[in-house]
Image 1 (cartoon, protein in one colour):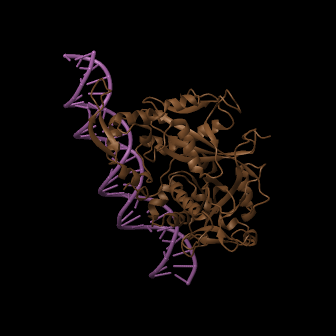
Image 2: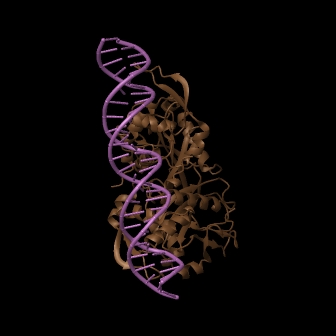
Image 3: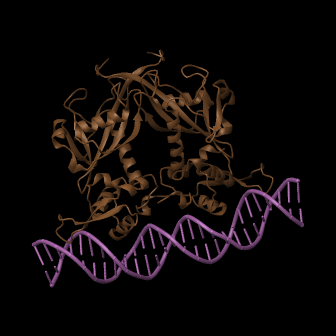
Length: 235
Length: 235
DNA sequence: TCAAAAGTGTTCTGTATACACCCATGG
DNA sequence: CCATGGGTGTATACAGAACACTTTTGA
């Protein structure tokens, strides 16, 4: 069947920005390509959308291949479509934004794809327009983490408030007042005290919380502001 | 040249959500199709991306065809890629979000495309997944108009504060306090008093303002909140 | 017993809100 | 001169920021 005879058919790529947090730094999962084209260079994890597959399913498939994870946080970010973006052939690329709990990923799969976790500062040059894609994703992370409770997606099931604070300090690269942060966060009612304490600490053990899944859902689309007002720059 | 022999090539459509404001209601520019496929039904304005054209340029081209306008506010919104979204042939559609000053558009071009301005409430059923696209765009408008100064894009060059207020009341479907709105707005420093007054009023004439283009640019990416807190629902 | 990190409380200040009042215009 | 809509002023409440103090832990 061909209802649109005069239009051009082109490749639809899917590229994935994958963020993780190791307790100290925000990291990106990048690939040192051991395949053509651009073998030997760094790129995002990607692939092509199959003809019989939903776009979003394609992203899940590609993310699963690399990380071994299925139920992770994925958002469609933006579609890149400069005519000359891929020198090999005309291609548009739909970019997806994923947040994963870094300890959960399948390190065998990552190794077999020749991928590595790299801090934002240390990231190498990337092929094509992948550099712009990453910039866009970092922007998106900064913007959205201040308005929606997505930070949790980067932490383990059970986490402490100080851990969460370190995460936000890493995202925004600013110090945050411990006491105000904690109060603001608890006042959202999103956290459930598990009764357990964190054993990884050499000093006073912090309370482990988990997300209140119900409240999380209802609150997700509301605007949020638990970042200091200084982040909502008005000047 | 064909570096990716095994992947599928498919159609890339561009669909445009075009918002306008007539001083009272937010309206959508929709097309009653006098061409195949789905002739006789309502849809968004769209077309296909050309093989040698940047994606964003395709959107500008399509918007220009319908409205006769070139320098308008356009954002890429989302790419729709369900495998069965277009029954005719596998197609992904990149949706663009446009805000125009309704008085500026070329009504001849609109007429020749069989298009009409329709209020959100009165909109008809649309073909394919265009309904979802519109819902998504309305969400986007509500979300972003509270955080960024995009409302101005729907008003004439010179506008009054009461006009702007009516716009926001239409977007959010809530009454806003006249006095607080005005103060909040002026405090942003985005408005320049033109010295002129609005003559269309039967009573006291309101001051005509224009945007401070410089400040607009710098402020655009900052979070903003001149909507009442009630909009930033936390419950 | 001391240092380091976690947790709780208090004060202060800026800003959003609610609401009262004055001004301009045309009928 | 009065109804309608535009513009300015002010008191109050609330939430964020700053900062002091207490508690827990392991070394």
